[in-house]
Length: 327
Image (cartoon, rainbow, N blue to C red; front, top):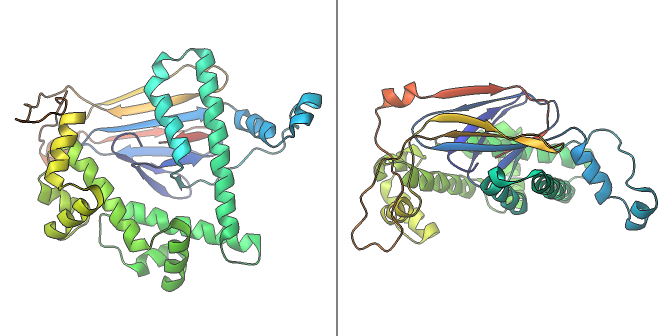
């Protein structure tokens, strides 16, 4: 998700996409997008033409000599990805690059960008498969089911981290015993569930500090902390600066914008396309801070009442039949 956050609903479950994460949906998966006003938000959603990813996969798994002799192996059934939240850095880097230069690409550059994105997604798919194989269990079906349940627990954390979340609640969402869930989650994601929740809260707080003018106390409570003192201490421990200093630096360097909904789609060149949605509005000048050496802000957020924010809530529904990467 380039800016802000949004909720994506599929037939299976809901996903909250925010920060350095993305979602992959398979061909034929219908989804709806919902988001609320109050801060800038943007989604960047490449989608592939039919059989495009399968063609790339066939080349990757075919021996070089065979490619020279007879080309890639014929495609079998459509390639399926696990529909879940991903945080693969290589894919995120390619998504950022495409987002930054998309409007200046010609047909050849766009095709090259989609080929590179497809390769990185396929490597991410392979990494997920390897992660499943490392889980305990004698049978592959057992390990696959464990991975699915862990992802369900992780998605529960993403959807509810702004509220008090108990280990029992996480485990119940994953249909696992609490201790078993804690042990498997720590092994799969590199930290225990409570540390993962803290990370999500701090990421959300960082976004609110830069993109809104909410008081520090309101930010603290909005992301799920119940003590301003503990929030400030944790924030400084993880970022190296206080929330106030982070806001000043971020606002001067990046600026912030008020919500306005718009949607753009790029032309197809036989590889896919992009659904790009934003909430933006006209900039409001922010006076420079005295003594600061950072670049001046180009725009700043202004306050709105809850009623005004509610009136700007947007709901867009898209019914798709192309595999897409939602970010």
